[in-house]
Image 1 (cartoon, rainbow, N blue to C red):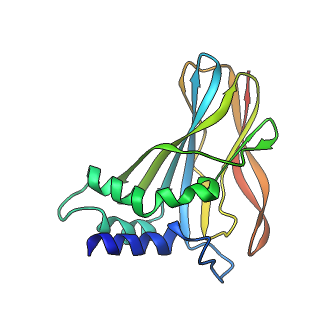
Image 2: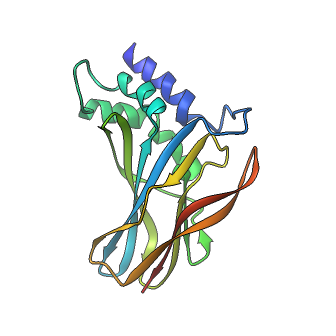
Length: 194
């Protein structure tokens, strides 16, 4: 029963958003998104993505994945969130726009999924490998749901990990087209590598 409740909650709130398109013209779930830059010898190789969900969504989801008395998600709870919610998001590029040298990555793969409860908020973390390392050029990053069911707000500056190449990231507003409300400005990061 617990698994069914989590599955239904995940379907309603995230997993099948694109199937059951909302009729309203405003978001129902809010998430702060932060990015990390994973560097290696050949340049920028991957993007870390963290989503911190709003209180209402977190309170709706966490009880289905935390065992009674638990304060933190167990391995089984994390796996349940992956199975019920996260694995369905690949068809939607994990609601993450990654543009390398002006070209939007059409297919986004994600790995290393983890989830946790942090001061009552549900937090997802995952990694997006780039098609090839970027030693120089521009990489733009933003969280975006074209259905505008989820509104992503940028949490802050990108953190560099590994062997950082010279880089500079700045906040930038990107124009995006929503399926319901038309064009909106979305805050993301524009990073110049090299």
